[in-house]
Length: 252
Image (cartoon, rainbow, N blue to C red):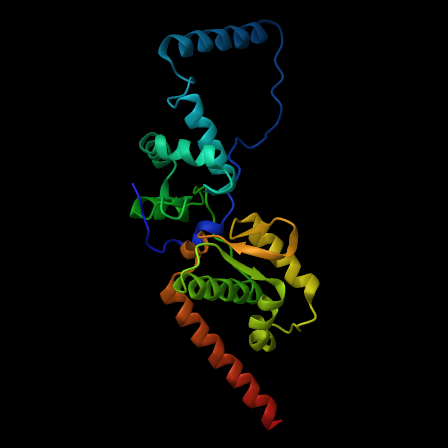
């Protein structure tokens, strides 16, 4: 099933580790130790007989699901085998994720698979109890502005008919410059920019261009992080703030 609408901005969020909290060690000996060992053996036999603990997904589907949960996103261009497996086992994977208040989004034309939080009321209540696997992360103003710059460039080049959208560091710097007064940064802050670009690559918003460290491909994932409507709204608001800061500077 294909979904093409702009979606949940929470896709950036990393998956939280899930496990039992460590407590005081349990020391047993003598008869107690034998009882614990016997219980373990009994549980193992019960599991084998009932099929519990064996997993419901085929091995290939499990491998693809693990890759998706590690990264939150799979691109067909980068992981074609994993992408194909997720499409093949879509219904099984969706059923498995639903148990964890997660959902699968597959955009086949763009070649993107995303892991998202469920949006129903039950999932929202669970998230408020801190039991959700995907957690919100607040971006800095600088990160947000860079995200908007990338989304705007992606939209413009796609409208022009480009299938692969490439941007270089100099163009990014030029498009960021009007907003830098809001961030207390300057155009010379290349180290800061490189650090944020690295984070964008880790989140699969950007991909490296082979043989050129100063150019990046903007992946289709960005459409699900920033919708077109949100882009225009935020750019207008930030431009108004820039104009206000500029006016105040001229009157001093």
